[in-house]
Image (cartoon, rainbow, N blue to C red; front, side, top):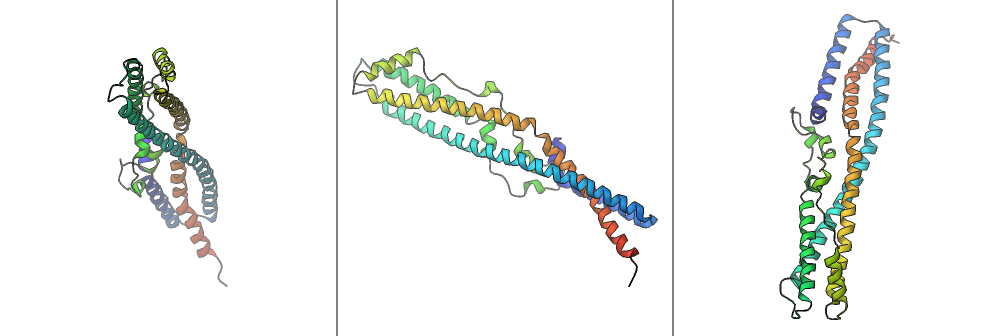
Amino acid sequence: MDFINANQLSLILICFAAGGVLTALLFRRHVPPRAWKMADLMWICLGGFGALTAVVAGVYAEDNSRLARQIDVAYAASREFDRDAARFRLAHCEVPHPSPVFRPAIRDLCDKVEFLSASTAANAALPLFVAITERAEPLRGLDLGFGRRGAGDGMRMRLPDEAEILHFAPRDARTDAAVALLREAPSVTGIAAEFQVLAQSYERLIDEVMALREEWQVLQDNSLILTVQVLALCLVAFAAPFRLGKSFSDILTAPRA
């Protein structure tokens, strides 16, 4: 299937050429009009099949485009979380707090933010995000050489295993205790609030990545429609010369006025 998707234009041209050769042979043998009528019927049937697969493939492409936009949004949210986490570490973790009472609590929150930031940085390098942020090359799918990357490959990104999606629990007993301690003092309650916002953002981000992974799995399970579409186009290309041959036959056999 990968070979078909990677060489779709070449295969379509080959099928069209094969149909053209057979049409020329029919002309040389002077087949009866009934043969051209059968060729016309074949063209109609294959054309209907091609139109049906084109509609289904269009729905698949639309779902894929919608998911790609959602992945873009999730990727942007991941980058925004990384910036907020870096800002938190720069503001509260680089220099020890003046009060020794709050230093252990702040350090616990800084350690947790460090883990969360590391997981989002690792997830941003997953194929789910890397493939969607690659810049497509115009007309890449029109390459005539065999073994090249086809236009359909952009819809078939390698899905990462669930184990590859790195995530941590944003809250635990230590962070809850640290937040409770910091909220008691007005001078450091802002640190607790910032951490809580980061934790909530991280939870939403991980949930969104997991949901995107499930939606992408559905698209992967139905990616066979891309191959079926190419095969349908090949059949239509094969039948097109016969339809042209029938038209020429009707013109040549039509009685002159």
